[in-house]
Image: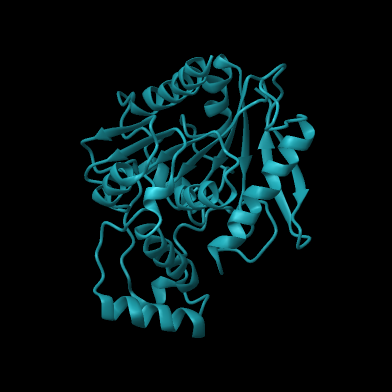
Amino acid sequence: MNIIEFNILKNNNVKLNVLTHKLDNPKYIVIHLHGLHSSFQSNYESPDCFKNRIEILKENSILSYGLEFSGHGKSEGKKASVKCIDDLLADVDSLVKYIKLYHDINDRKKNHIPIYLLAESFGGSVAIKYSYIYNNISGLILLSPLCGFSTVINNCSVTLLKWLSYVYPNLDLNKINIKKELLTISKEYEKSKIDNQYNFTDRLTLCSIRECYLFINWLKTNRSRLNIPLLIFHSENDSVTNFKATEKFFNKCLSSDKELVKFQNNVHSLLIPHSDNDRTPNYILNKIKCWIQDINYKKI
């Protein structure tokens, strides 16, 4: 499957990099959103690679678009820096508008192509808030979403970090010796990130972490507002994002069609196999393609 990469222009004239592929007469569209300081420019062969995601999803006539947030991957913008989560919402909306125009999608038409967001980690935060505010998405699929951190920092430390983030927004957490957790237990994958010029997950800046905490606080008062189909995958012992916070969000949201799939391991990046025998990533992708199809069959 050949990957097509192109740019769309955001309203502030920032070029956003988008990945997609050719698919005749798609029935559904999925927008993929990556995690914090990550991208879709993978140099590690796994089901998480965009081309491998596509291969499975297209079996059910699902057309995929991968959006690289501003400042991430090949998109323009300051690298390893999220000044405001709302800027990333604008990124998503730029792509949604492009897709609707390109595919002649009119939400008022009965048989329009539904659009879903498939988002991982902090990308899940963006997807949740986007769906609340814009209300133009047919469903959410979340992988280890950031609804809370697994490592709890006391309120005084959070207040101090927030204050510092406005004074030194691009200060790297390495400079203040805050531990960052491994995303997987695959040593090969962790090593590949070091050689990936588009990966900045080892450079967590204060402004980016501030935006994570601001979203978590926002979610506490808004989690009951979601009422679109929802599918979540999360490890109960995730060492990065807090499963209990995700479960609380899941239980509070008003979606009548929702499902939470739990895993027992401590892996954060669920589409990266942690051994040669790990079939979890393939199970997840096949579950997603069937779930999207089933959701739409229920509407008929």
